[in-house]
Amino acid sequence: MADRSGKPRRLLKAFLLTLPVLVLMAMMATQGRPLPEDPIELIPIIVAFLFIVGLFFLIVYTGRTHRYRSILFVTYAVCFVISFISNLFEVRGSMALTEEEMIQGHTPFCHMVIPMTVIPAALSRTIIFPGSMLQGFAAIGPMLILWLGASITLGRGWCSWACFYGGLDEGFSKIGRKPIIKRIKKKWTYLPFAVLLAIMVSSAATLTPTYCAWLCPFKTVTEYAEVTSATTLLQAGIFLPLFFGLVIVMPILTKRRTQCGLFCPMGAFQSFTNKVNIFDVRVAADKCVQCGRCVETCPTFCIDAESIKKGRTRITCTKCGGCIDECPKDAISYHIKGTRVGVKPQTARMMFVYPAFLFLSIMGSGMMAGAAYRMLLLITTGNVIQ
Ligand code: SF4
Ligand code: SF4
Image (cartoon, rainbow, N blue to C red; front, side, top):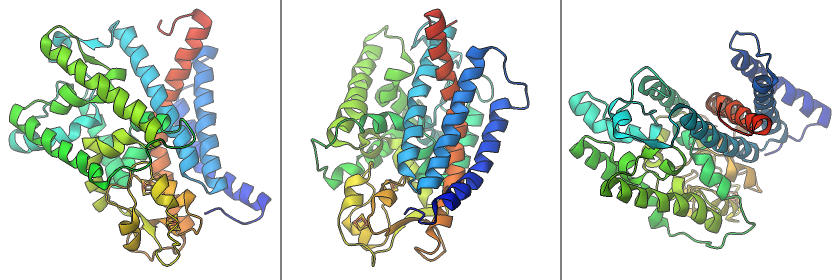
């Protein structure tokens, strides 16, 4: 859905539309304080700033959302892993979490826990997670507020614009030119809902976040319970293959986000927020020539012939923009609920992209600057930790 006006006009328009992001990012980078003088601290901030603003400019200028979102999203996930692991080694000297640290609540809260907390919080008004409500790195309160804000604004767009894990399987899905496994049966796309139900019930029954304890593949690249018993050994024997299978191998073989589309219970949970969100992605069925490109492109299995006929994507849509960029007939567009489909699609797109990009930038800029800082530290001192 590219803008077909003249080049200088397009450049000017893109520049003007990028200005708010440029100003906001500059304010975030400085946070009212003078910039650091030490080049090792200053260079990462400038690099992150230019990278983020440059990608927003390209989203506006080219009219392509998914391609540049994806670059930022994957970079964000990689930088999250680098920053998180470096911080752990700096603070704790290890990625392994001891029982004592867990009891004391020295664990950052992660949005993956949210579905598991719902029933126990409703029944007993307790959050079944050993983290701190307000203090320390990724405390429960600020994370819940961030998640709530993103859910109201983006719905399941969270999974393509805010989640710090989603870029990992997205990144691996970019490896290779063609998928080796071409078809995934539709029934598998319901698996995340089954996992969601299982973890909600088991967490309520045991008053522990069972997905974190037993199934989360991302413990491989963040933190995990120290292996000191048969139970913790079994846990490691589960999360490691899940990570390699769902986040690395299957995305390479299918060129899809298999962890997000076929397993993640948080993604399934987040799908319901698409119902209360004002944005959706709609298909003008009269323009569609049934080429199937959108179905092949969708990284998370969220559009099919049946949904196209109904003029929409499935409830699981992460609003990544992939099908919109790919459709040769401009039949798919971002849409504001309650307005006519296909009317002023560029306005609807920008109204969605501004808050979505802002969430991605807010969540990602610190991680990117942090990872760039670690890399500079490695180059200059030979060590990523101080
Ligand atoms: S249906 Fe389109 S916008 Fe939704 S997740 Fe799939 S490719 Fe992205
Ligand atoms: S890519 Fe566009 S034209 Fe092709 S099937 Fe999808 S909606 Fe129809």
